[in-house]
Image (cartoon, rainbow, N blue to C red; front, top):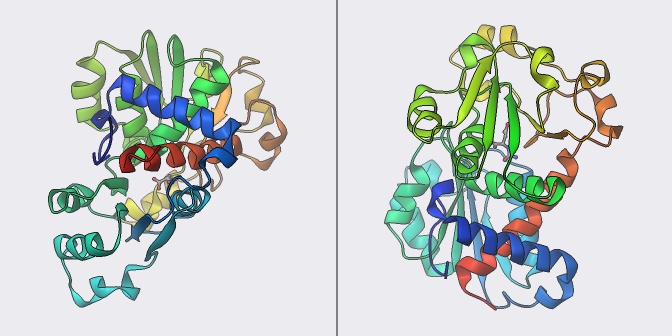
Length: 307
Ligand code: NCD
């Protein structure tokens, strides 16, 4: 059903399409060998104009584990981008070689421009401070499988809610499930953009509150989604230095949280979760990274229409 579709925004998939993708991911997790050849003869291109560890490597690992191959660049200066080639021309060229492309770009909307210039499926792997839909697939699969579903949850998102694209995509996607509440924890300067408040939360009648302190709301949460302060999107270093350690989750603070709350983080972590938290059973961020590969295997299979 999803064959040859692009994934640029978390709303590009219906709830049914999302659930189908999660069910396929579950199936792959329990029978990986059954899927080890389904993408034989297919090529995935990874076009990364910004740094990445998890997103690029999990996409590449996903394609290799499906029996396909991978081409691409992780450093735009090593490609013709450095000679001034437009994204439209790059994607037209890549479509001559590959069957599906994954793009990360510092400019908001760049993957959309690429998608408008090809019929090959294009996946947005993060565009500036805008959206990161495949991180959201990862987050949703993690919450669904660990909490047993995607409804009736109070979700705290903490850190850089202004520039954090994973947060924007997560809020957009979660608004479609039943009885979801959001607690938005950030410094004044890093609050969620107005369009998320008005066009996503208010429009969908989602209950939310904004707060600056983490401790006083921790006990209400079923999911705590931590994020790093997005240094690369700041106009000056002084502001970054002042705000970077606004929140540090440690063992002491976790005492305020429910026993079955889960802590997620898209990673990379900088300082916002103390290493001592990693051994707490509520810390699920590395499990989350693992789900990321499986959900990308499901996504690639669906968009390529392989069986
Ligand atoms: C995120 C991103 O690139 O937006 N990383 C990721 O893909 N897991 C989060 C971040 O960089 O802070």
